[in-house]
Image 1 (cartoon, rainbow, N blue to C red):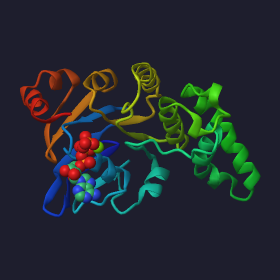
Image 2 (tube, rainbow, N blue to C red):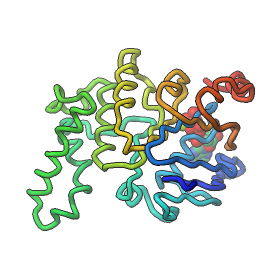
Image 3 (cartoon, rainbow, N blue to C red):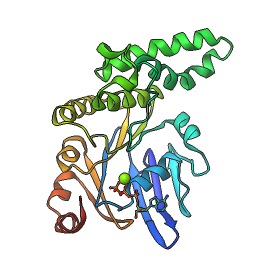
Length: 247
Ligand SMILES: Nc1ncnc2c1ncn2[C@@H]1O[C@H](COP(=O)(O)OP(=O)(O)OP(=O)(O)O)[C@@H](O)[C@H]1O
Ligand SMILES: [Mg+2]
């Protein structure tokens, strides 16, 4: 069976360190896939390879049946791979709405190229529902730099959704959030439409089990295990890896 995303035999070296060593990953349309493993296992590196911000020395990345290995992050975003990073990246002086409008502009360019005002209005039409979807309507006019950390995370996801992704890459979205913020984030992620597949990197296993239907475990740049949350939860190999190395 072919997947929406197929990464094969991906290897990334930094000097003598193998950050990834022959990793395969397949994600299907609408799937919720979690990537877990101890610190330094290669999780962010694999997201970088899939998102286009790192080039593997070996291996291929195919998305929607096409080789995207030569494309950078912007070109992959146009094809439907969008990303949030380990640290939130929003424009602090722009309002929440303006941040989503900026993120939505590339999506409305092809239809409205001849009419810049029309592009902006089209993007503004998209922003309202996305802010609503991410629970941010009440703070739509607040500069992003004044938002709470959890709200900035939600805004970043709204911005990623503005690109109409078919695959959303989330790198530790719950990092630094309070318990209440984490609960809210989980609800919002659970409510994402199934048209969007999700690849979630997360250390917190309670979130992984709440949000994913398949899990890949990396360790030292290699795949240690892959399976359903139940299979991973009961795997002695995974227990050992976590006993050995997770923060
Ligand atoms: N740009 C880089 N230059 C050199 N080494 C790097 C670089 N990026 C990552 N590494 C190394 O590659 C390995 C994998 O890093 P990566 O960030 O992918 O791990 P991770 O699984 O995301 O870890 P964490 O859970 O701590 O975020 C680590 O040993 C890291 O130090
Ligand atoms: Mg990481």
